Structures are given as C-alpha cells and as structure tokens.
Length: 179
Image (cartoon, rainbow, N blue to C red; front, side, top):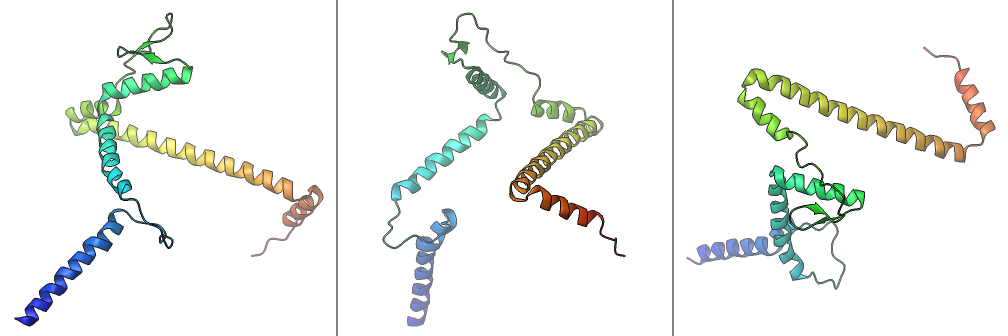
C-alpha cells in the first residue's frame, strides 16, 4: 500500500510540476532566460486571451467581403488624405464621391464559381492561380536580386578604389582557363 501511495504521489508531483513550469513555457515560450530578480507580470498573460480573441475576430472578418470592401475603401480614403465620416461611408469633403464598393469578384467567389462547374472548370482556374502566384514570386525574387546587386555595387564602389578594381578585373579576365 505504501509503495502505491509513493507512486501516486510521484505522479501527482510530476503532473503539478509539468502544469506549473513546463506548460506555461510551451504556451508562452521565452527566448532567453529571465534575468535575476525579474518577476513576470501576471496581467500580461491575461491579455493574451483578449489578443487571441481579437485576432480570431479579425481573421473571421477577412472572410466577409462586405467588411473587407469597407476597410479597403477606408484605407484608400486615408491614403488620399480624406476621412470617411459616419456609418454610411460618405467622405468628409462635400464634393467628393464615395469610392466604388464592388471591384469585381474576389478570389474566393471565383473559386466557388469554378468549383460549381466541376473538375473541368476548376482546372483552368487553378492553372491561372498557380501561374499568377509563380509570376508574383518570380518578380519578387528578381526585384530582390536587383536590389541586392545594386547595394553590393554601391558598397564595393565605396570601399575599393577604381584603379585596384580595374587591376583585379583585368587579372580575372586574362587568367587562363583551367581544365
């Protein structure tokens, strides 16, 4: 009986230590150990719940095309330097017209329409989607490479005198090719 009690006590202690020390580290990982004398704020952990719920609401709002169109209109108005007043979305300037609410079908609406058509209608939609994404990635990589090369040229031009750079270039060009 005593052996079973010791085993049960050991299991309870291990579970308590896991819940007390390990689980909070899994949920809220710290990148570095806290300095000596640091006491973490307990209120900050309570804010995580509110932050998580807010993030979930914002994510759910992204699936509502009307709310997204309204936010896009607000951002466009802010970029132009005007503010949208009231709940009707009218601008604060009297002569301005409200931006159009419908820009066209969203990607999700196009997908639903293609999915209703079956596999044959979905195939060109997915091919177009993949081609568009591939073009976007290719352009982004090309812009990154161009920017990197431009920055590299600027750094090398600032550090290496022109006569040294020309001598190195000449020695590299006239070096015999080894096979």
